[in-house]
Length: 330
Image (cartoon, rainbow, N blue to C red; front, side, top):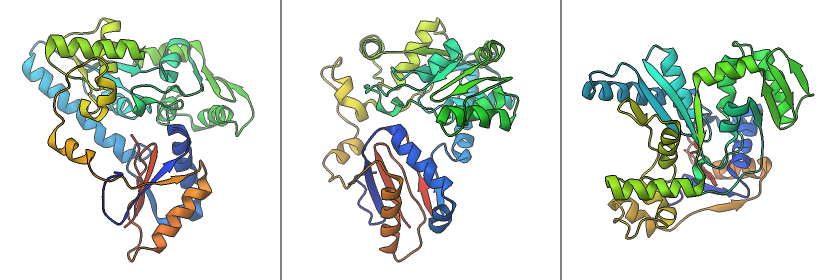
């Protein structure tokens, strides 16, 4: 997005992390006056429509696998995830009746989700920089949607624990768990239920790079450092079989700085990716501030002849496509 030359595209490079930028997005939506003024929308998984669209991956994959492997009755899926959006779509697809076996959550070093499914505690820690930057997230915004169902579709219990977790409410203990600033822990009974819904595994940088190297040498397939995490998770859990699908996330060419650490020489970039390398990058540096980002949105809108139509977020860039305002993030 930062190389798109259109005059209604504006990239804001927010000082901070994915979570900082995502907090700005959420706060912008909570500002009713601003939201209505710029007609704010979202095309990332903040918007339910994004999750709805991702459900189609699971149905499509299921029918392709069962077309080729006639004995397979249920298909399992491993999803590299930071924000829990894509794998949540798999959860909903299963609820809709798709014959899904296992749903595997694959994380990198930023493993808040793996730690939850291991211990029942959802605890915020500092972000660790990794070779899979789109998964460098310490709070998974879509996980709140899953917790709603885990808590028996009870919005009050969820609200109490999440407000305590976010620090906007008092510490709380109720029938589903305990919440305090930066930590939420569910009951043993609910942890058991969560483990029935999802399995999880963690891959560190060394394991991810080793997987990329192995599959390139043995199978002639080059994984990106995000997709590789889904395969590491499958291998660690002993689920590598014909009924397992790993959802890939990107072409390896987008992350050649990481991939070249174990693959040399690298294959040529696809023409479209190669063309981007020589394009100028357009961006505006902004502080980690809701007000600063809102002011720029309002300023840019004032420069447009037409009312705003799209506002995108790409971490670490906040990309404004003016021309309804909506957000996009990986």
